[in-house]
Image (cartoon, rainbow, N blue to C red; front, side, top):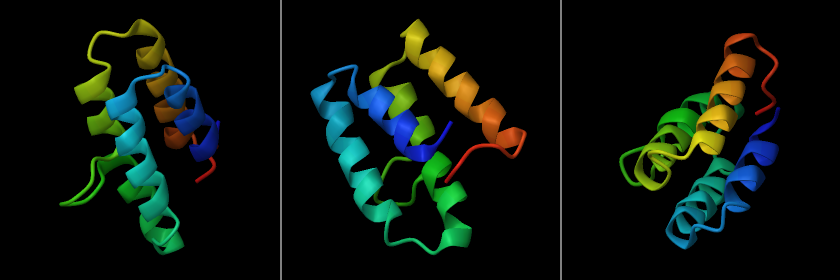
Length: 83
């Protein structure tokens, strides 16, 4: 799994507010130094939500998003998530 695949899968859920946050995350992600991207992706910063907060805020009880998030997290833990 990769950053772009995960974000695109979330966009496909058609949640307009979440998509705005995902746009902000994606835009800012491109400006981050490569070594800070993983932390920013998962946690965000003081101005933007990370993917964890986006999932909690906009998809709190969506089982499909939980499965996607779990798969992405496991890939990151195993070192196979592409940032």
